[in-house]
Image (cartoon, rainbow, N blue to C red):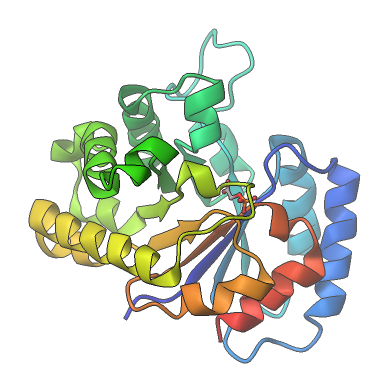
Length: 259
Ligand code: PGA
């Protein structure tokens, strides 16, 4: 069984000072350790990464809280105004990076091919990529979700032939239906299980045993009040939480529901 992983994706919310206030509130809420603590990852905006890394190093929590970036450049350095690269994140002690979020695909025109380059950049450094995939409402209504996701995976894992076993062990995949993100609507727990188990079969068929151990997260309108039946599904290995992670107490309640 894979250890559960819960990732908070703050998107473009919170200044570095607000991030510190969140951490303080989270510390208070989790002053007692959780019954069982899943692996925890926090993805704030770039501007809060260093502040949070320092605060966590100076006063660690009772359990590890790893940091993630929400995006990465495909190149290590150079004339790429506005970009942040893998070595820069690594130097800050960032361990994870979200790659190919649907907002980046839709608003910033990231393609499967460019996402594939970003995955390669993360893996060629010591970062653990969280690759996001998800279908739109039309594909879902037509019952084509799994085919849509497989096509996305094929495109994003274009460089997979160059992957070594260790690369697979650092990869996480997050299934986030676009129509569920920020809408308050989620697929039923049974529908999520069916997609996750279909993805697992595909990963094993495509990558052999390496595909059996890639954590599969669910994301999209997950909150404390709806997370238990979703996180209890056999093929769901954790969650990528957006809006509900902005409130430290709500996020702690989601972690509790994992236990
Ligand atoms: P949401 O976002 O939980 O606010 O729906 C999830 C995500 O986009 O990662």
